[in-house]
Amino acid sequence: MSIIETRQLTKKYDKLTAVDNLDLNVEEGEIFGLLGPNGAGKTTTLMMLTTLIKPTSGEGVVNGYDIVMQPHKVRKSIGIVFQDPSSDDILTGYENLKLHGMLYGMPVGLREEKIREVLKLVDLTERRNDLVRKYSGGMRRRLELARGLMHQPKIIFLDEPTLGLDPQTREIIWGYIENLSKIEKVTIIITTHYMEEADRLCSRLAIIDSGKIVALDSPSNLKKTIGGDIVTLKISHADIESIKKLDFVKEIEISENIVFLTVTNANENLPLILQTIGNVDSVEVHSPTLNDVFLNFTGRIIREDSPEGSWAERSMHYKAKK
Amino acid sequence: MNNLNGILAIWYREYKVFLRERSRVISSIISPLLWLLIFGGGLGSSISVSGINYQTFIFPGILAQSVLFTSVFFGVYIVWDRKIDFLKEVLAAPISRTAMFLGKVIGGATDSLIQSLILLLLGLVLGSAGIIPGLHLNILSISVSLIILLITTSFFVSVGLIIGSRMESPEGFQLISSFLLFPVFFLSGALFSIDKLPGWLAPFTFIDPLTYAVDALRKIILGVSHFSLFFDGSMLIIFTIVIMAAGVYAFEKMKI
Image (cartoon, rainbow over all chains, first blue to last red; front, side, top):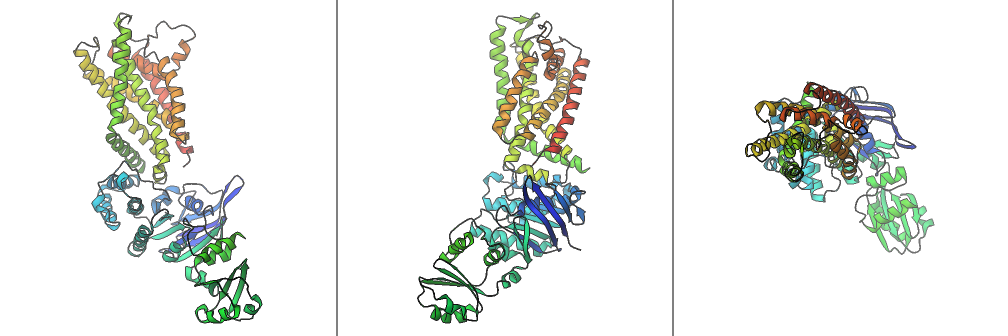
């Protein structure tokens, strides 16, 4: 039986349907990702599964408990790390954890034991008696990971766990998340709009757009749906007709002076493409990423925090807008 | 069982925060002292009420006032909790909203009572130094005063929490609560006797819960009062039960 199951889960705000008839099954022990742009309905889904808001219609079962009828039992089974830091910064790290243990009704002995254990897991033992106010963003996120874990939940929800963190800290947090999954064997549900994060961590991914699941599979299977590598060419005069004749070119898309090709075995076939097409100003080849998958399923690009990237990436944004 | 844990958890946190923000305690002591010494001393140089030194007469009223302000302003912390997102951590925990509300009330009451105890002890000192003569302060009267103040603070913390549960910004909270606090303070008779009120004023004074707190404290500390201590206490308890029921309801309806 799945540890999380939803059937036609829906949340409407006035006219806006934030989550639209969502059917999900999450298996025990996996890291399941909800990937989508801001406003796709990821956080709303998470809020419903964690019983913080009530669905408009549909059903959800978490760890065998109904999210509407048995919210307290659901809450006992889960840990949550919110998108925005939700620890009290006038308390110390230790005090935040103690408070959490009290809120979850843990007996004193077990509470102190788990506090020691989770502090060690996120390397905050040394800083446990410092006010959270003095923590860096990454340390605070680690504290909240520890907190979400300390009452031994079966499932942990992580809402954009590395949002706003620098790349190094992000890498560290990913390490902790992988450890949780391996060592503690908890099921992890993660929402993210970072492709790299989804790719690296998740065993399965649901791509969500406008409150609906548009694709659901493992990251590698999703990438296989693209059917080849992506070759992006910048050219002034394209001889498109002759490229079309090449049988290893699966798909061609043109926007102004940029040509996107989906090509099988691009590394071997690239010379032939270049020969055929003639004068090329610039070329980029990459294996399909989740970005390409997302574009393929939704016709749009996920806007990540930093708009910087290669010209090919930026042109993908351009293509998406079209 | 779990609800008791929840109440304790919320209380633990409020208590820790209170200990850490000492400026809160100090400022909450300074303002009543200014009222007592400057306002009371100044006005008292020319008037007295039913034969009692004016400074002495307003001591119970100022005590009630300090509890009123501290209690209602305690509600602003729930607005802060929402602002710093800590509220989510509590709302996501397996405790009922009732437990959350009660924990907050006890937390706020603890703040008020610590502050009241300090003021009562200062009254004891000022009394024995002859600065404010005629205060009947001893272990018994201080204990009974604290019981009356406990009921009073439970009422006004609930009021503050109800306002706080609906407010998005601390500024909004400040606006609404100031609007409410001054009429409640002035109508209560903290600064005057309610024995011979003009006909138009009396009804307003008698629907003000603080009136009964001030009257009860006068009975305990000065030995004079308009109503009996039993009547004052009963009125306070009825007011408090009603407002706490409303507070639980407000917390049930509270959004993230």
